[in-house]
Structures are given as C-alpha cells and as structure tokens.
Amino acid sequence: MEPIQVTVNGQVRNADGAGPHTSLLDWLRGQGLTGAKEGCAEGECGACAVLVARPDGPEGATWTAVNACLPPALAFDGQEVLTAEGLGTAPGACAVEDLHPVQREMAQRGGSQCGYCTPGFVCAMAAEYYRPGRSRAEASAPEETGTGATGEDHAADHEVGPNGFDLHALSGNLCRCTGYRPIRDAAYALGAPEETDPLAGRRHAPAPAPRHTRLRTGAGEFVRPGSLEELFDELDQHPDAVLVAGATDAGVERNIRHTRPRLVLAVDRLAPLRTLRTSADSIELGAALTLSEIESALDGRVPLLAALFPQFASRLIRNAATLGGNLGTASPIGDAAPVLLALDAALVLASRDGEREVPLADYFTGYRTSVREPGEIIRAVRIPLPLARATAFHKIAKRRFDDISSVAVAIAARVEDGTVEDVRIGLGGVAATPVRARATEEALRGRPWTADTAVAAAEVMAGEGTPLDDHRASARYRRAMLEQSLLRFFAQTQPAESLEVSR
Image (tube, rainbow, N blue to C red; front, top):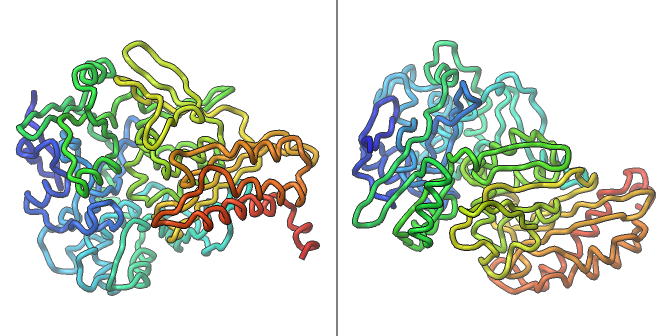
C-alpha cells in the first residue's frame, strides 16, 4: 500500500498516524491547523467547515465546503483539502492586503467578533465565491412563498445578492455573537475571482481520483474498496462493517455516542454507486451521489425533490449526505423517505448474487430495520416516470431550516378533469417507520377534487401512522399538522382567482 497522504493547503502531509475513527477535524488540528473548531460535533454549527476539491465533470474540479467534524480523515487519502489558513495569499500574514477576498470583506465589514465561527464562515463563503457562474447570476429579492403544489416553492426564503451570492450557502454556519447582517454584507460585497487567483485556476484541472486505502490499527480498520467485488468480499468477512459515504450520520454516532466499529468501509467514490441515468420510464440516482450533486444534475426536473433539497439540513450537510445513507439507516425521521414514497420510488439492492428491486413502501420493516439482507447494499434509487404534476413537500419543524422534522408530508397527485385519478402520500416522523398514508389515498382516489373531499380526507389523514408523543412534538400536534397539510395542499392546487372569491 502507498503511504496515506492528504494535500492540505497545497502541502502534502502524511496521514498514516490517523486512526480509522479519527475525524478530519481532529487530524487537521493535530497538524497545527486550528482555525477549524469543534462546536457541536454534529454538523449543525459549521465552525469546522473546510473546502475539498471535488469532481466537476471529468476535466474540472469544484471547491466544496463540508463539515470536517464528521468524515474520517482517512477518507481524504490522496485528496485536496483547503482550510481557512490556506486561503490567504501569504499564510500567517495579518496585513489586510494579504488576506483572501472573503477574509478581507469579513474583516472590513465587521463580520467577526469572538472569531470562533469565523474560519468556518470563511470556508463556506469561499465555496460560494468560487461557484461557477456565481458572479453572473441574476440577483433576486427575498421571497415569502409557501411550499407550492408545483414544487416551485423550493426557492422560498432564498436570498441572492447583487453579486449572485446565494445566502443559503451559509445555512449551516452559526454565529452567536456577531449577528448576521455584517456577514451578509461581506458576502454581498464579493466580486468575481481574479484571473490570477490560483484557487480559481485549480477548478480547471481534474479533481484527485479516489485511492485504494487500507489501514488497520488496534482500534479497528478503515478500507476504501476499489470495486463492488472487493466491497462484497469485505462484507462477507465482516457483516457488521459500517458503510460510510458522507458520514453525516456515522460521524455523529462516533462523536456523540462514541461508537467504534471494527471495520469502516468508504463507498462514496465507488462508480457503480454514483450513476445518474434517465430513461423513458425512470430516473436512476446512485446511492453515493451527494444531495448537492443530485440537486445540480436534476436542475428542478423532479419538482418534489427540488422542494426537498433546501429543507434537508444545510448546504454543508447536503454536500456530503447521500440518499443511500439517508435510507440505509431506516430512520423514521429521514426527510428523503416521505418524498421518495410519494414518488413511488424503488431501491436497487445489490449483493454478490446480483440485484433486486424493492419498492420503498416495502423496504421498512420496523424502527431502523429494513428488508436489506446481510451483504446487501443500496446501489441506487429508481423513480418511475412520468411524474405527477401536482406535488408538495411540507416539513414541520421548530426551525424553518436545518432541523429535524416533527412531521414531514410529501404528496404527489394526478388530477384530471377535476377528479383525483391517482395520489401517493409519504409521511415521516409519525410512526416507527416512514409510511404511506394509504387510508387517505383511498379517501381521495377517484373522487372530485373539491373542498368537501379535501376536508373529509384531511380527517382521515389526522389518524395516519400512529402519531406519537416525544420531545419534538405531541401526538395531538402531529395529528393537527397532518390534517392541515392536506388542506394546505388543496389550497395550493386551486387557481388564485378561486381563492380570492372564497375569501
């Protein structure tokens, strides 16, 4: 095996000393790069944000911001990482003229007080600063729109500055003392990168290819398989191995619950898990594609997914999280499951014996359990075509963004000549598993799409699943939200003039 090395701020560093459970953040800080901090250790505060060179097509790269507290350091073997220390033209310099444009604007506009969160903000801002086409994007005023039945509501609450800076690039960064106005001012003051900017120029060369990595210590073993065959070999020998792509769940388990699996298998760069294919009858999304990659590639072609993405955690998390990971945990509160249930999606499960397709509605068997067998992985998600035209995703949570759902509702309906020809409703957070609201679907299917039908079906919807009491919401609240969600969907599907008349 070649030595394990990570290129950090342009310098190749040996990472053989990192263990299988050492986070990228801990390893970087051990290297003396202490700009990135640990705030929450759960990927919610962004104090640990760094930049990674990720593929942008076969010939280019993009600087992508991720939380360093979650992924294993060994997952970056052969990769390029950039920290806040590496952004300035003269590392370690304090003169304003030696700062990176992002750092300079933050300093000049008062975007930092205690400074704890500042390096993370700077890295997230730098990713947006270098986003291709950002400086040419048209600005738009903040909007206050709901989650519409066409799926076009995913732009709700987005704010884009006059320089094309999408403020949601900072949705995963928290500041507790400065206040966000000067940080926003700094973001909106950024111009386009100069032609001589070496970090901008880096985007025109391919990102590093994945390396075959294997390291065993007394604490466990980390392996990046080079193929599916090798992955299945490892699973045959170690059925309890933990598969990691973005580590947005496994990293939290390591940091908060101190789990230490004997074997960690990195699958995020396996080509068979990174497909994105569209045929006449389906769209196939590879299980190891990040949500940001899917969002960019689909570009709104699946409105229900387009409505989901801005409400799925933060940009920092979406830059690492995958559908395979979100569904592999079989969590009852994963936001992707209700949407994919409404889309009638199926999972492609692969093993050494071949592949099988399982409808997502049949995948969950209990709390965090599924039909997936030992040695079997999620290879892809398939969404059948054509898509329903009337869709909506309603996420009810204490915070508007970057929060766990109390209730999540996804609806996809086909209404023809005023009649509900077909409808699928996926629910999250109301039972031990994500569920289809089948009783409500039956109350709607074949009936006229009228207020009376919606009210009657909403009463049925209130009892779907087994709405439970927990620290996020009471059963009574969940029932009320289920009922209101269907009524809201009905209102959103009505022509604006009809709503005016009803008022």
